[in-house]
Length: 441
Ligand code: PLP
Image 1 (cartoon, protein in one colour):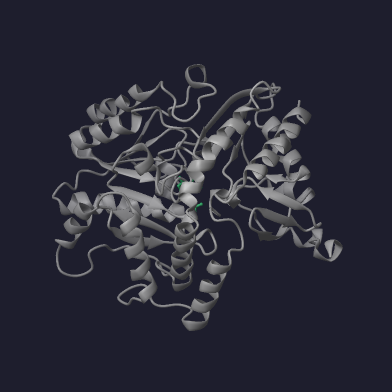
Image 2: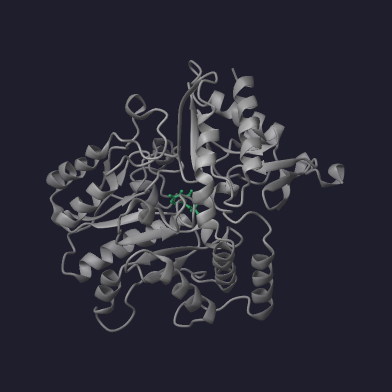
């Protein structure tokens, strides 16, 4: 089985892999061929514990019967329905379910296919909203350093990762950035929210003063920055951002593509941290990643403002696959699994075990920081002299060889296991990581 399943190296070349060192990968491929619950199986028959829920997305674990059956049944009944000027029951049902779950009056759901398009959709809705309100000069977007908002032109522009930006010219014009909230000397080895750093939100006042509020449409932040290494918001920081947005009538978009659906121990991080955004972007855990899908949840005020526009199409935006029937079926089944198994509460109750285990790595060679919230956490290592990222990559590879998949982020690794993880599996994950850290000296 192992030999026949192994992917022939001569078939690897044509696939131009995303965010991957293609040349390195194709010289030493890492290929998984099946997945069930907490594990992947590689093409040479090894089981790998999934320490990252795929890519922060398989929150209910892999191969869930209920989700598979729902997708199969929907594919057999109706594979596709036109998304514009036509509807199908699943899209309305899923919108109603999400609207009931989302905090406050984020009651209106616009579907897309990826986190990236959800972000671009939210930015476009912000522009359309202000224009409809008679404030068409509000076009500027404010993002944050070390933010990841996907790879569309809008998301890349408001994002704050120089590697993701430098190849692509000017992106969209009129964007400014808040400083990121990470400061090793002030917050190393924080458990949960760091105490230091709420004042960094006040930088928004400086940006507003520089550009004038009449030019700013929206501020977008990840409640917890995931892809740049689990940067947990300082206590009070998000509240201050919300207050400054209110003062200047800027829309606040919470990008919850990673933090939605139980990752931090509540349905959404906005709820967990006690803020009410004007829009929330979601994807990943929405369908347990079984079918690509994303959404923007929009406040009643924004929706009603757009509905008060001229007769006709209220928003000239949408995708062929917005509200795809298979994705809606997967989404509805996923939400049922979350509810039936109480997985958000489970994440909350496992979080202290996860925190204690992760912080148990403190003191190992080169570990300079550990941070966590809910069931997401990161360990950061000192970079090797002249070789940034090399130690992180070695640790990632060693974990892969010894039975664990995690995410590498430069000289840090991130963990975000499926919410079904057991205490024993948390222990196993940390043991494997411990061995990999020691081996990467
Ligand atoms: N926004 C956030 C916060 C993300 O973490 C991601 C992906 O990790 C995205 C947007 C982009 O999502 P996608 O890769 O589905 O386009």
